[in-house]
Image (cartoon, rainbow, N blue to C red; front, side, top):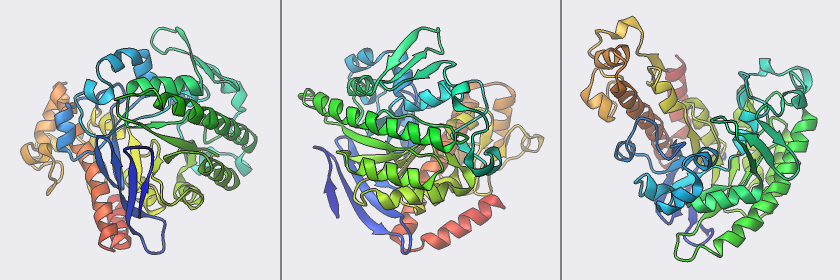
Length: 411
């Protein structure tokens, strides 16, 4: 089944997971095809940290995502446009995506200066979903939300800026990525029902405005490649809100959907399932900001097609690397003289050429190459984990693959 999206885009579902919502498909864009499920490598500021585009491509990565907020602040979307757009600027010839900047509403507002992230443990929320503290007491450290949009101060120099749905669309239009996202409000997983509902309804109104401005801008692209627009489902950890949000956005003219906002770690897969059942089956779904190996596998089982996260390069810079048996820390003394690769049988450039001892030496010597080699491995690990999930779906053995991987990774 092939579904045409906006000009230059289509999505084809090749096979489904029996008894589940997961599927393997192909998402076609003006700059190439993405075989799904797939991990989207994050290049926040137009670069995947510590890696050249050629190194990213050699990991098997199919698509790169840039951050609208960060590239707006520096170098500025107009300069990116003058350099030929995100992909041309960073010398990446494959598919590209940009987020909406909505996550910064959360990270600069409610979550600023706290340890709160978009995924919480159930122990971090109080009885019957009440917030740990009142949201409005935390809002506005660097960002203030109103009906029209968000006013925020730059984390770089304190200068004041304003994002609205229209502004987000205009920035993403200039950045020129293949796939863009409607402006949304990401809420805290500790937020109570009342605020989650308020933020969700505001996100829906912003989604309508995003579609309107996106459509206007597409009519001005001329010879530039067309873009696709994804709506973002919100509603936190509440089933009725998640379903309402998915149903509302499904009725709008979106090419695909992001599953955003906040989750409770223990039931994230359930929340993704609620959403997938309400969204059109024939359009791609992107689980935003999720990149832990097991989370991606259960997300794929529940119908998510794309995943993105900064984790593989972020933890690599601290000496943490993924293995089939879980993460290991290359700063541990036992790796100083360990002549084995990070993981036996791994096909990444790092594991093919360097032992753990060399990486341990690089980290202890504060050499820049340490972050590069560890990042190559981590990106390769997640990219190819999703390729293995895809193969398991196509070959009808997903359940066995999931059981074996989770048992070993946790063990």
